[in-house]
Image 1 (cartoon, rainbow, N blue to C red):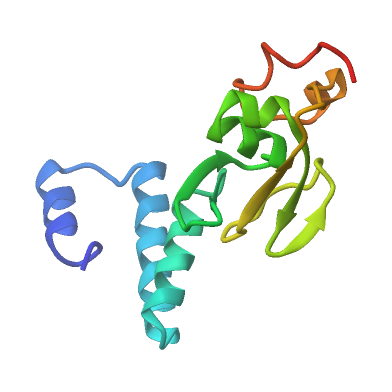
Image 2 (image 1 turned 45 degrees about the horizontal axis):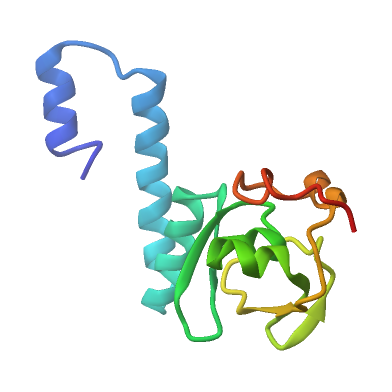
Length: 144
């Protein structure tokens, strides 16, 4: 449709050749149509589209089902601080999909994240080496 329908008419009327950006977008539309033809499950199709549209973002869930969005590479520490600064400050570990993971674990789309805390714990300066969101940065550093 984009190549032979309205977009083609617009391109013809403008009298200009398609730019590289236009060609890239047309190619992406062709790919979307192929995916739609080849996938029976609409949810799988939408996941493919979302992954293609937002490759640098990760969507994870709280234990209660709330969705949180993070940059690719985000860790449980980033997640903890997104809930509340006190949760981040007291984070000692995390369960992802019911399994304990290191705090350096990089969150993946669809992960269910539960943060473990201790009132005696403090942020670690080492967290600055792997957090990707700005929120943990100002308070991390009291050493632990």
